[in-house]
Length: 214
Image (cartoon, rainbow, N blue to C red; front, side, top):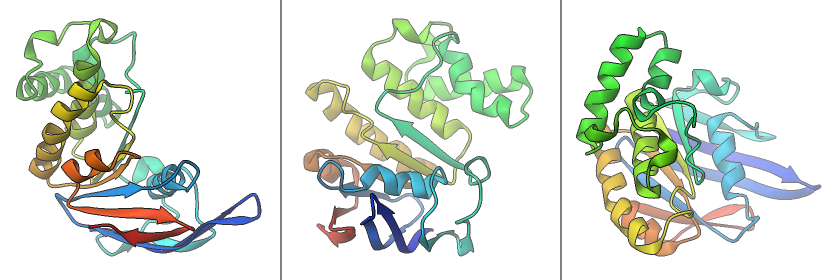
């Protein structure tokens, strides 16, 4: 269980987040919607540990991790630009997080190949990521995020760079993969149709507070 309690932060001397409370269970996706500048991405950075709140707490399974640095939280982040390494092939992009965790390179690559096979990308393991389509790159990014078995997945406008048809195809796939992995996920998006397709619960961030949508 990922939990936010009374999160507050000011921006330019004004309240950006003003007492945000949120719970996300294992295998559950919660969507955050709101206008540009409402604080959605900032809230995601607070969950990740990239920024710190002025007030409030971030907890995971009851443990206060508010002051825990990002690399020790065990969370994975995905952004709209995919953030893949252009100098590495598909296999090594997916294996990267495992190698960073100390898994021997050969074993990491074997696990990466297994993951890519499950994602329908087995034929692309040695391809350069720069040669992939947008949808293929986003699937590689998700495989890289999930292979380390993160405790939570944080998604910031993950499909905004893709065309409408591809976005629709990936929504259900991402929802299924997240539920299958049994991890808590927060999706930041401006697209309510996308949010409803992926998330069990939706919240609007307005005036520094969360308001339930469904």
